[in-house]
Image (cartoon, rainbow, N blue to C red):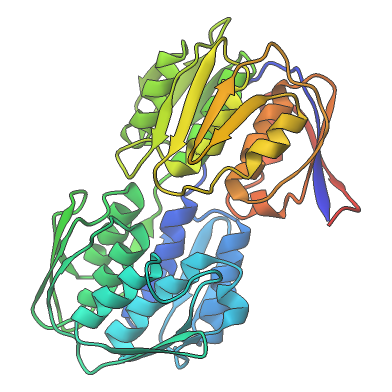
Length: 420
C-alpha cells in the first residue's frame, strides 16, 4: 500500500491547473442513463471514485470509455437496475443511480450506503423525495427497492439541504409527468452543474443555483456533451498549500466565485488574493493570523475544507476555532495532526486550535479523503520527514496530487509502504 514521504519546509511557488470536480462527475455519470445513446463528459478527473462509479455503471450494461480526461458514456444497452453492496460500500455517491433508474426504467434496487439506516439519516431524504414522485419504495435486506410506472410531479421540501437528495430527485423528476418543485434545494456548484447537464439533455429546469428548483417533466431526454466544472475543493486545498508554506501560487482553470467563502477567510488570515479570468493567485503573509470558520451548506465555508483549514490554523499566530455544522464527527484528522505537534482541543463539533511556531515530521495515517489532504498540508510545513500512510484515500478525490505539488516545489514522493 502506497504512502507519501514529505520533506517539509519548502516554500511553494508556481502555477497549476485545477482538475474537474469529483463531486460533480459522480452525479453526471449516472445522469447519462436518463437518455439512450452516447454522452461525452469533458474534463473528467482520473480518480478512484470515478473508477468505482465506472465499475458500477458497467454492471448495469453501460459502455464506458475513459481517456485523456474524456469520459464516453453509452447508455443504449443498459439492462441492469441493481447497485450491489459490493460497489456502494466503497462510495456513498453510488446512491446517485437511484434517481435515473426509477425515473427512466421504473425500477431500482440500490444498496443502502455503509453506515446508513432507515430513520434520521441523510439517505432518508432521497427515499422520501422519490416516494413523493409516486415510487413504491421498501427496504429489504439492506437494499432500497423501488418500483413505479411513470413518476408524477410533486412539491418537495427538504428539512435539511442535501446535495445528494437534491440531485437524485432532480434526475428522477426530469422524466416525470407534470411539474416538480424542490424547496430548500442544495445550491452547491455541483448541483448547478448537474442541472446544466440535464438541460443540455433536454430537461426543463428553472431556478438552478437557487434553493428553489422547478422541473417540468419531459417525455424523453437525449445524449449531450458537457464540460465538467473545476473542482473547488482541490483548488481550495492548493490555495492553503501556498498559504501554509509561506508561498506564492497561481491556480488556472477555476471559477473564482465558487471559492469566495474560502478566499475571504484566506484574506482575513493575511493572504493576498488576486482574481483573474478563470484564475486565482495567492501570496502568503510572513505570519498567518488566526481566523475562525464554521463549515456550513453552500455558499458557506465547505465542510470538505474543514480539515485543511484546521492544518492551516495549526501554524497561525494565535487561537482559532473551527466548527463543523454539517458533520459533527468529522475530526478524525485531529489526533494525527497532534502527532505532528499541533495543539488542538476538541469540544463537541468544534476544534480549538492554538497555533504553534513549528510542526515536526512524523508518521501519520489517513482516515478519509479530506483528512489525507490535511495531513499532507501539515507535512509540507513540518520540519523533517513526514510519512502519510493509506494514500488510497487521497486518490479518491485528488488527481495526481503529488505531481502537482512537486511542480510547485514540494519535496514529496509516492512510495510503496508496508502499512495497511
